[in-house]
Amino acid sequence: DAGVTQSPTHLIKTRGQQVTLRCSPKSGHDTVSWYQQALGQGPQFIFQYYEEEERQRGNFPDRFSGHQFPNYSSELNVNALLLGDSALYLCASSFGLDSYNAGELFFGEGSRLTVL
Amino acid sequence: AQSVTQPDIHITVSEGASLELRCNYSYGATPYLFWYVQSPGQGLQLLLKYFSGDTLVQGIKGFEAEFKRSQSSFNLRKPSVHWSDAAEYFCAVSVRGNAGNNRKLIWGLGTSLAVNP
Image 1 (cartoon, chains in turn purple, cyan):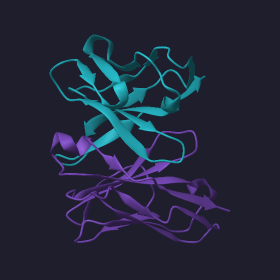
Image 2 (tube, helix red, strand yellow):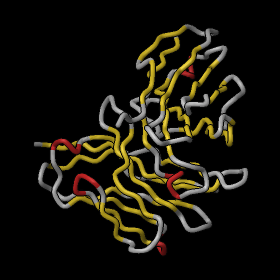
Image 3 (tube, rainbow over the protein chains, first blue to last red):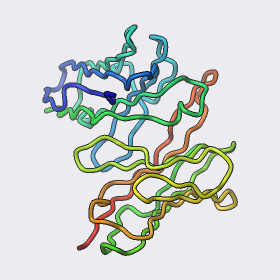
């Protein structure tokens, strides 16, 4: 049973560029959440996708956007990269929204983004 | 406002010693509480969770946590620490989102655990 997989694992971009990160949820899961984790910090919630729609969003600018596909996989896009966007981006999957399991997340190993 | 506080940024214990990591939360409703562990270079792994019922919950890797409503705390404990327990530990509370029945996790800043041989 494959867990949550993310790609790429590491990438380096320059300011102003755009990046796309990908996530495949754990088998049987239909909800994907994205988190940003800066060095030495806890994860910060970016947004959540369910049924191919963004269901809720954290305090992140519109430069951060996403998508969920019919197979439940998801992408995170960041435009006009800033130095402060350098972080570990974590994808987490869960089953359902209004279930207590929505708070029980399975995480991928993350995509480490460095912006120069 | 909803928040999670982990008062200890860094803790060092000797292998075989007992461990307690503190977590305090602020949330008006009944909380769903979690502890996650993040080993170096890895994603987060759920250690244990509390939804309701028995206030002492058992998790993986020999960890347990006790929910104390009167103290708004959910401290993580382990009777005997192993060198492989060195990692970052995060406490989180699941709260309802802004729309409908969605939930999201509010995270603490984490406690870094070092284990001396």
